[in-house]
Amino acid sequence: MTGFGPTMRIERLVWLSVPLVAALIVLAGWLLLDPAPPRTIRIATGTPGGFYDSLGKQYRSALGQSGLNVELVATTGSVENIRLLLEDNDIDVAFVQGGITRRTGQEDTLRSLASLAIEPLWIFAPANKQLDSIETEQNVRIAAGERGSGTRDLAVRVLSLLGREKAVQLVDVGGNAAADALLSGNVDFAVFVTSPRTPWIQKLLRASAVKLVEIRYTASLARVLPFTTEVLLPSRVLDFQRRIPKDDLKILGVATSLVVTPAAHPAIKQILLSKSQEILDGQAVLGTLDQFPSKRLTYYPLDPEALRYFEYGPTILRRYLPYWLANLVERFWLLLLPIMTIIIPVLGFGPATFEWSMRRRIYTWYRELATIEAAAEQAGTEQEMQELFGKLDELQGRVKRVHVTLPFRRELYALRAHISFVAQSILQGPHSTGSETVAGTRSPPDE
Image 1: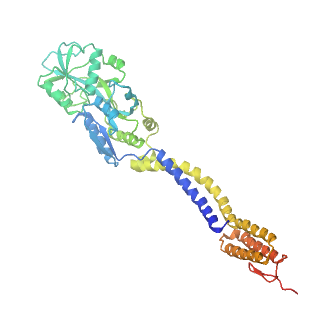
Image 2: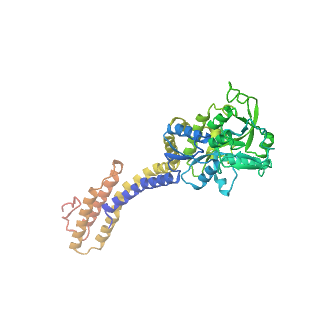
């Protein structure tokens, strides 16, 4: 039997389903969007005290000011950095020298955010020996960096192009240890690929016991090795008073790139690019002012986030808000479209749904009223009629407890009038005694 309770339960289900469906869609959208950015990242750098180590410390300081914790991971260099990016899920970012030999197809998944600087290929030799060129000397020992370093990788490729890989002995030592080996006479050449500001490069440039050896055909090498570039090192640019270098020097340079994994969060990529702009602003020992960070000279394809950054710059939110808050606002903004897709139809559907619910509270009783009226036509005894009067009284009492808003009170009063009408019809029937009071209506007295 239809009643007040089931009707209200249905209405509650209808009204509760709207916000529930909206909440489920919002939750699904939130989960499908990129998760919140991490609060800590790990950057693979390089040899302690080297250029990548120094660069990593600058990023750690700059990113820390924005609330992002940075853990630096010391490595032997670019080759190990690439391996860590591919194999270690905890490494998010790495400094990588351009031109590192690709050993597996997995490297194709890596992406560059920007090139950060030009690293020269430095070749030093003892000043008291007649070692003028690495291209002609025989049976010489070359400190060419540790295995796994970018220096070793580039040195091998250059020596191979010059046809010298079998004419020299490569010694597995790099960094400050290689500089000390050269100064102590344990090697004939020392090769480095690093910034001019690296401590051991500064030490060798100022040491009278060694000299800087120039590579001929740098323009040709830059053509053959497209990840390299010919760079002019102007006279005195490294130390004006000491005239270092004494003359203009053409050197072979290779770009350092900021490389990320495909899983790196977009917000992390954006803040790395933004901080790169701050860190590298005005540094132009090699290249020109404002040249770096750059989308050029990157060995791996540019990440889509980097393409957007270099095209449009940082978003307004990222310029003024902490990276995590800017990302939170942007994620909510992306959810706004599906939310509005739900809310706008609901707003249009709401009035119709409300009207339906009000009318349902009223018209649901007509089915029961019709059943009583049909039963009255079949009633054959006074007892059956009294039972029907009791049902009408009960129905009228339940209808009086129905609550509707003012615009629908007229229809509610019409329902109560219809109940009284049915009662009057029963009273005037063949089994009526003419004295019953039904649903608040008494039959008129006999005249």
